[in-house]
Image (cartoon, rainbow, N blue to C red):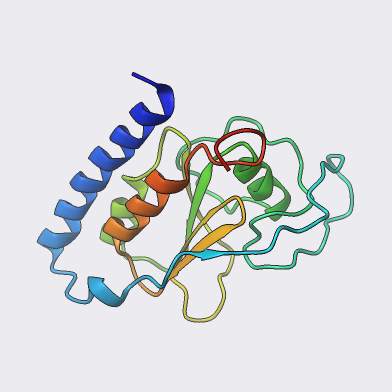
Length: 169
């Protein structure tokens, strides 16, 4: 099976398991949790910067393109927030990043079930007001006010392996 197709199947399988977990927990307002998937303008400064260089400013929060470092293979679930210059490096490689703040243990575990095979889940130091979870891919973002693993899993499946370096973008 082609690798991107296999990844999508694995992400969808994890999504189904996570959806069942949240449905059993009684999350009643899942329909309105996530806004639309939005395409953001490409930051023309999307080039590699040297590790240790001054932190650049980004045009969006969290960024979906811009100055970045070459990202090492990230752990699927991060314990600490990922710096923006590394976030963009992950997205450039075709990864999807799902960041969250102030989630219950059950919601955090449901989101972490989406991690793996190109999908990275990490806490955020902060997110824009009203956002509990934000999924990002190269020049693409979805903002959620609460956890909706169905929408987040669909975002991941649709955008993994779609970075600018010939990964389907």
